[in-house]
Length: 370
Ligand SMILES: Cc1cc2nc3c(=O)[nH]c(=O)nc-3n(C[C@H](O)[C@H](O)[C@H](O)COP(=O)(O)O)c2cc1C
Ligand code: SF4
Image (tube, rainbow, N blue to C red; front, side, top):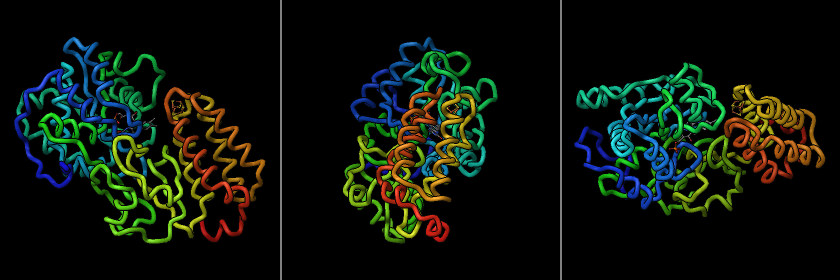
């Protein structure tokens, strides 16, 4: 195992690598750690094919997911490793500009990244810019990051053109999560990228960020961090765009590049908390975070959140659950970005795992446990 968080961070010479680094990250099965788990090598090739020495690398440290803390932890502990990944990407893709896109409220992480940047050479420093990502959920989406860097507006734009075709300043652009870039830096030095960062949230005995070797089961990862603080009802894997899973299904799941880890949040819902209230609160949040540009996203998510709230306040029956399922399927795939898809994936898994709670919801019980 090559630990990300437990190694000392300092500036070190970059290995001499070019396009062959793309093959190495493909062999290492590096997938994006920002949420979509997309193979990094595929994105790199798309940018490399179009770059004429003008490509741009956007280092995504927006971390807009409310429960996620792993990107901040990594930026604070290993800023040089992230910068190495970005400079290596710039070399392999013949990019002349790097933009650090860091959440505007992530002060400690941003300062650590700036401190590390000051320790780099002048030619390296001169290619790096900075943009403070607004503290909104959709601001972390890659199209929103590019829109913000180009025009100061952190809302997603229509694709195509995709970032690899026309991104920052109209140039081919690679947007990559900070953890993904850190793994690239390890692979470039011949190490393996066989760990993942997860954020334990909810009823974890010790909530926070842990690094887990691939192959560890989710149950062992939680146990190694002190276990749960209450009897769990379900596990939300992957944050607010993730899926609810029954604990007995979640605990034996091995963690690796194939896992449905999304942004790496493992949220544990305690038995004492009302799942319908929890789902309604998250749907309300996701609806309020729509950038209001696409009707199905803005109106659809609001209608779904309202229906969940109605269930919390007034109870529900099987018809209401079926209605929610149908509406959810009508919203999927109908936005300019994946915000509505993520939200309805979350809701669909809730309607499956909490089918009984939704169908037989008792309002007075909800008020006691909410
Ligand atoms: C609504 C929305 C919010 C997102 N927020 C983030 C974020 O905060 N950080 C992040 O790295 N990726 C976020 N993403 C994913 C990015 O669009 C993009 O896929 C990612 O930065 C690419 O890097 P990766 O392939 O290394 O994960 C978000 C996507 C969507 C649709
Ligand atoms: S799908 Fe939603 S969040 Fe994405 S651009 Fe459209 S309105 Fe905005």
